[in-house]
Amino acid sequence: MEKIIILAMFVQVALSLAVMIIMGRRRFAAAKNKQLNLNDFATMRLDNAGDHVRVADRNFTNQFEIPVLFYTGCLLALQLNSASVVVAILACVFVITRILHSIIHLGSNNVRARFNVFLIGCVSVFAMWLAMIWRLFI
Image (cartoon, rainbow, N blue to C red; front, side):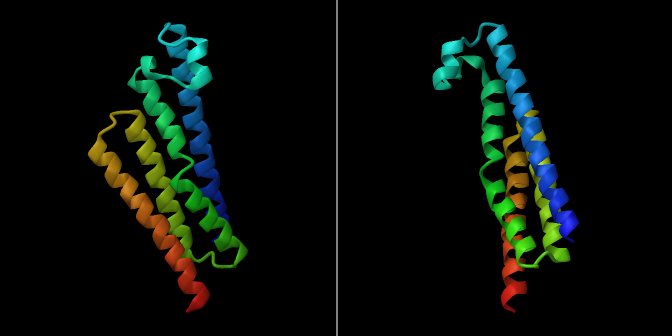
């Protein structure tokens, strides 16, 4: 199960890097099209860049919010030998929801679908933590 958890963590890292590339490409395109100038990046005033740039920025920021609880939980599970089948499955569910969340956010940006996927991801991280605690103390 340890390998599956580490693989899930790697995929989450790869997703973060992919979103960073998308964000960078959108920023460069906005600068090239004169929607932004270099001074806008000094203070990160991206209002003139359009929604597609701000959405990519927000999605990149999202990769460092709830995923921090995921990474911490995974590392703790590995350290405490609590890497059960349940924890591994929940880790995979979380990463799948993060991928779907990014696809929705960077694409159609359907708020309802994005929220539902986000909620499933949050529940999976919480359940992962509960499964670890259960295994440690019960």
